[in-house]
Image (tube, chains in turn orange, red, blue, yellow):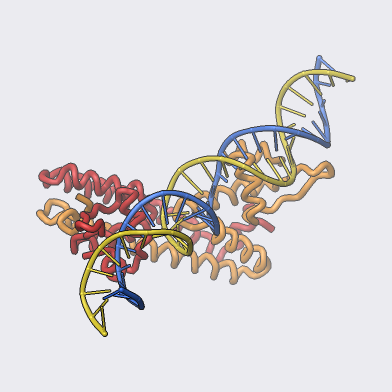
Length: 121
Length: 121
DNA sequence: CTTGACCCTGGACCGTACTCCACTGTCCAG
DNA sequence: CTGGACAGTGGAGTACGGTCCAGGGTCAAG
């Protein structure tokens, strides 16, 4: 499919897709006249990109994941390892959130809000 | 304390602290000669700022929290509500992470990695 | 009175992640 | 063959979150 269709299917703008391609986040073929051509799977890949990004991963990190995926294409084990590593990162992030949550919960209904600890004011 | 000590205690640079103050994230007094003066609690507040920031909250959002804290200073209920709301945000973020984790886990050890879904390559 | 550590301000600059724009090329329908 | 939808490029601009620097003031110690 061409860039317009991919944009329509993912909700991204053409500019963003071109930017992603330039950043190495997305690889495309070209037609004889220079138009970009994307495989149908690009839709799913971009969905993954947006999810990972929303969760705090930089485009550079996501692009690295993509590259590792490319490099280890024939090794299912490498792929599993990559996903497992990513799961560990996600778990760590969740643990941090749990700590923040606990800190917040401890202050609900108490007389010692953050303000007493130096919030602006 | 003055800016140098606060910087040393938080691990931030003076420039960052000045930037935070300019952004309304931090409020300071001034000595007669114009030097900024911070309360000891600023250390704890900045720790909170960095934690929240690392978890994906923008400085503007964090500053808003600080302002609301200031505005509702005498109402313990408002503070609790604020913290409860923040807990809901944290819970939502954790739920998103859980979804990503499940997606990753589903692909570990299978023959259908993301690459089959359109990763670059 | 000078040195050095500390502080001030304003403004330029950086990386990330887009977003917009001008100008140009391709291709199909009427 | 002309119009319009689509595509391409390069470059400027934006917002965020800093980071650095020049030029200058403050203050205690020697």
